[in-house]
Length: 350
Image 1 (cartoon, helix red, strand yellow):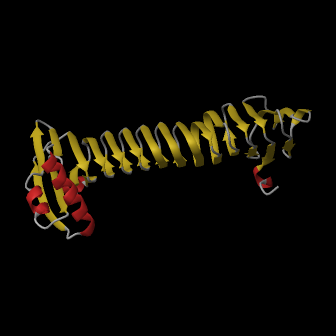
Image 2 (spheres, one colour; image 1 turned 135 degrees about the horizontal axis):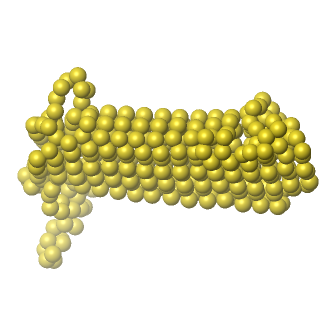
Image 3 (cartoon, rainbow, N blue to C red; image 1 turned 45 degrees about the vertical axis):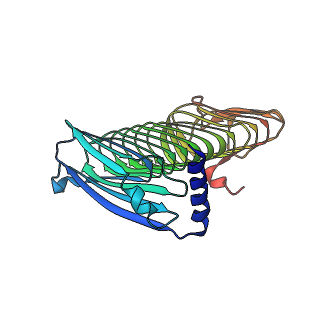
C-alpha cells in the first residue's frame, strides 16, 4: 500500500466517525432444481438461516435469498463497492454451493450478507460464517455448522448435529440424532434430546433439560444445570457448580465440580453414581425407592444424613450403609474440603 493510499484510508476512517453515511441494499434470489442431498454455504460477515420445507409442499428445489448490505462513510462509496460483492450460487450433481466473495472493503466501509434458505428436509447441511449467527430448523439430515463470532441454534432435527462457535451461544432443541456441541466462550443449552450428546464450553454455562440419551458435558469456568434426564450422564466443571434434578440413570452417572458444589436429586438409578468435589459441598436428595450402597467421605468437612440406612457405618467424616436393603449400585460421594448432606426428596427443605 502506498503512502497516498494509506492517507486516503485514514481520511475515510475519520469521515466515518462524523458522517455522512451511505447505504446500499440489494435482494438476490435463486432457485436450484432438485433433487438435492447436500447444501454447503459459506459467509464472511452475516447470518445464515436454513429452514426445512414442509413435505406437504412437495418441493425438492433449494430456494436461496441473499440480502446484501453495504455501508460507507461517504456518499456514493457504498453503491460503488456493492458492485464488487458477488454471491455465487451453483449446483453440481445433487449438491448446492453458496458463497459470498468480495475484496477487502475500504476503511470505514462494511459489508453484510444474510442468507435465508429453504431446502427439502432430507438434505445434509454444511454451514460456516465468520461473523454472524446460524439458525437451522426442521432438517432430517446431518447438520454441521460453524461460526467464529456468533450464536448457533438448531431445532427439530432427526440426524446428527455438529456445532462449533469460538465466541457465542449454542442452542439445540428437539433433536433425535447425536449431538456434538462446542463453544469457546458462551452458553450451551439443549432441550428434548433423544440421542448421545457431547457438550463442551471453555467459559459460560451448560443447561440441559429433557435428555433421554447419554450426555458428556464439560466446562472450564461456569455452572452446569440439568433438569429431567435419563440414560447415562457425565458432568465436569473445573470452576463452577453442578445442579441436577429429576435424574433417572440407566447407565453410570458422574458429577465432578473441582472447585464448586454439587446438588443432585436422584429419583432412580440402575447404575453406579460418582459425585466428587475438591473444594465445595455435596448434597444428595434421594427418591424414596432408590436402593443401593451409599459410600460418603469428606476430608475436611462433616456429613449429615437424614435418610434411613441399613448396616450403617458412621464416623465424623465417613458414612456407609445400604439404601432400602440394596448393595448395588454403589452411590459414592467425595469431597476434600466441604460438607456432605444426604436427604430423601421429601426432606429437601431441611
